[in-house]
Image (cartoon, rainbow, N blue to C red; front, side, top):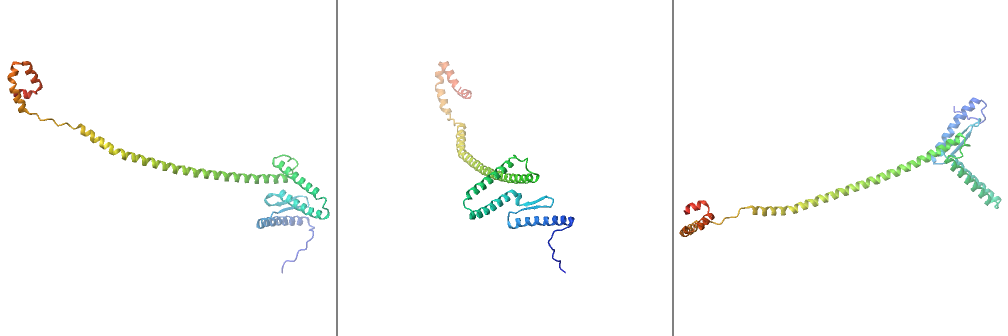
Amino acid sequence: MGRGRVQLKRIENKINRQVTFSKRKSGLLKKANEISVLCDAEVALLVFSTKGKVFEYSTDSCMERILERYERYSYAERQLDANEIEQNGSWSLEHAKLKARIEVLQRNQRHYMGEDIENLNRRELQNLEQQLDSALKHIRSRKNQLMFESISELQKKDKALQEHNNLLAKKVKEKEKAVVQQALPEQQNNCQDSSSMLLPQPMEPLNISDTYEAGSNTGREEEGNPAQHHATNALLPPWMISHLE
């Protein structure tokens, strides 16, 4: 047999009512989360128990923003209805709407700055803390992204500079090699010139017979002039003087 249909009515047993409330509340919060994730919808859920305890769920913990959106929407609906009934009060209603909106924004701004939080209850303070944490996460994520992009750009510049330095070093080496190759033939020519200058010069042949004849012809004349004979002997090497004598 299938399960019979449960009649919806107030549960009289207090314990059973509390257990059912806890189970249905958890299921309701789960369904709200599922519809927000699956359908990309903004969901705000408020549940008050019999003891006055509040249970809430909101997409991305933005209950205030969703409620403000609902107020604007409901206010717009009421304004349309009011315009159909009375057109003269539209400007006054718009002024009141903008004034209320400005007050909400100013109050939220003061709360974000840490001001006027004495009258907030624990739940409101928790929501405010969650909003600030979410904002800080977005700020840090954006800052880290910018830092990573900056580091990547610096790494690219460093790589480009290294490649440019390597290219310059290669050009310098090629230029030095060309200078060395150009200077090598000049050094070889200079060495050849130096070696030719160091070689001994050929001596003119000495005609001994002519010297001997000249010595014999002048021997008699030198006998009468000993100074001239001594000068002549000083010009000749000793071994030739012995042969001449």
